Length: 388
Ligand code: PMP
Ligand code: GLU
Image 1 (cartoon, rainbow, N blue to C red):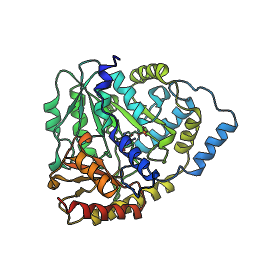
Image 2: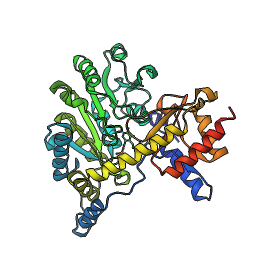
Image 3: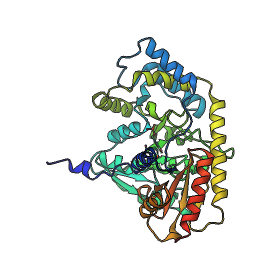
Image 4: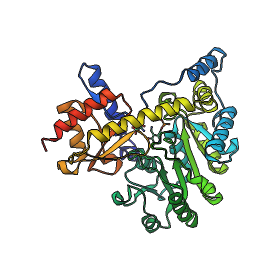
């Protein structure tokens, strides 16, 4: 059978694959510690579920406009104004089936065959694959372990060619939890604006930030930066709504219009009931819930940092946001896939290899699970790495 050469070149999502493999092992009766999940373990707040139930009962069960319902888009505009100081109108917003789908759509619209898209390693593993699906080439910048994994503006400037169309920025970052401050964002924005490069700013972990740090959107730093930026966000991580599949993009109205055309043929509008739920999530005052979740994540992070302190075979990088611990395993002398595979087989602990994130000397440990599981994971991993 002749199948698409383009799709054959795409790697399946290791995060989704390993998580489901570990869950299947657990379902078969194995005592598996799963530190792989890319989703909050908290349930969706009841008020949001109630809004969805009400939508169902009142027959809100039909197609919505392809780019999302106008009332949800208005709510998103309010959120972007309130939280980020960014002014958008509904025709500058598209609602999609998760932030992943928003990024996919925007890349399809911004890229043509042969274009280049700059990615900062370690990166969320879907970025390079989505770039390839858009016919463009992912260009991975130098990894700056010496700069807390943040992009060096000189590296950025050097990597720009006549084919560069887009930079993907992710703050707080998956997998390192790095966050960029305003001055750093300003320096990046200036380079992009000067070179007419669009910025896709993935802010999905905006609400999960530790130690009193603050989130800034690169679109906030200047009017020119706002024009060059497509902001990506959603309710998956902020409101524990990963399964509802609602994300959005905001930016230039021509880009959004083309993304809407694409979406109108690919998927139509996202689930009508999920849209009502997302509108409730965005418009309700749920700061208390989000604060509590943030505190819980921070406590778990601290347990992990403390648990691995003094270890040299598994050295964590302290995240300031998101819910992942990126750990250096270079002293173990194996690649990240071997490490993760053997750890799962020999100790029943699931972590994600760093290779697909652009760093084969690291693994990603998720702390989107309870403290007892985390503690069990720490104990098993510490015991296991002694063999190296
Ligand atoms: N961006 C990053 C960095 C992520 O880790 C995820 C995780 N799923 C997403 C986007 C997509 O989120 P979703 O599609 O669930 O809204
Ligand atoms: N983004 C999450 C992760 O990195 C969820 C899985 C996925 O969508 O890739 O684990």
